[in-house]
Image (cartoon, rainbow, N blue to C red):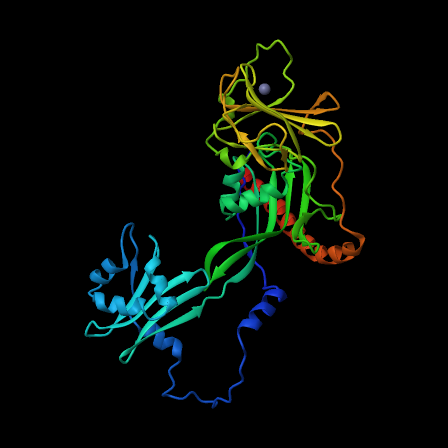
Length: 423
Ligand SMILES: [Zn+2]
C-alpha cells in the first residue's frame, strides 16, 4: 500500500497590481481634513447601518411576495405601492425560491426598509422616507483573489482536489487544461500530483464562485505538464512554458470524465473477450449516459446501428485519421455533418455485443489502428513571434511561483513520509 500523503495547503498571495488598479477605478479616494482628535458626535454611516435590525426571509417554492408581506405583518397596500414605485421595484414581482429578502421595521412595526439582491453585483433597497417610498440601487463589487493549491493523488483526482481545498468545478478546469496530454480516465495513478495558482471570486470576503486558473502543473506517471493562462489578443488560452498552445488536434480521452465518480469501479467491467477480430480499441467503462466527445475536428462518415457495434459513430479527420465510437445509447450527429473537437456526439451505453456500459474507442491512422493514448501527434502551433516575448516575460514570474509550490509539495511529502516511518 502506498503511504497516504494528502497535501492541502493554501497560500494567500498578495493582491495583483491589476486588481488594485481595477478597484481604484471604482472607489474614488477623497482627502478629508479631519481633526486629529475624533469628534465625539461623529458616528460613521456604517455603524448606523449595522444598528438596523434586518429580518431575512428566504423565499420558498410557490411563495409569493404577497404571502411574504402577510407573514411579515405588512399590508398588501404597502406592497402595491412598493412595486409601483419604478421599474427597479417592479423586479420584486419576479422573486425566485431560495432568494433572500431583508426587512427593517421600526419599534411600532411600521415598514422602514427592504433589500433584495437583483443580481450578483446589484442590490435593491426600498426605503420609507417620510410619506414617500424610494428605491436605491447599490453596487456590490466582486473581488478577485489569488490562491494556490497542490495535491497528491491517492484515490481519485476529485478527492485529492477536495483535500487541497478545490471545488469539483476547479478540478474539472484543471483536468480540461491537460485533456490533450493526459487521459484522466485510464492513466491517473496513485502518486500523480498537481499544483495550481487560481482565482476565487469573492464579495465582502465571502466565496461567490471559482475564477480561472492562472497556471498549473500536473505530473502523471512521472511526466510533468505545465500550463499558463495567457491572452494572445483573441482571448485566454493555456500555453506550455515554450509558448505552445495546450490544445492539440485530438483529446486523449473522448468522454466527459466528470461523470466517472470516485465510487465507480471500472474493475467490475469485463469487455467481451470472445471476439473473432482482435480487440483494436480502448474500452472506457463509465456510467451509462456519460457524454461522448468528438476527439478532434472532422466530418461524420457513419452514424448508424448494427448488432455488433450497437449505435456507432465514425469521424474522418484531416491527415488520414479516423476515430470510431461504439456501443452508444444515443447518437446526436448525422452522417455528413462537420463536428468540432469536444462536440457531444452521443452518450455512452451498452448497445451491441457487450456485457456492460462502456465506450469502445478506436483511433485509425492511414488505415492502421493506433493507441490514441500514446500516438505521437503534431505539436500545437506556438504563439506568434510578436506575442512570444510578452508571453515569456508574463509567464516567468508565475512559473517560478508555481515551481515553489511544487518544491514545497515534494519537500513536505518527504518529511511527512519520514515522520510516518519513524513513528
Ligand atoms: Zn472494446
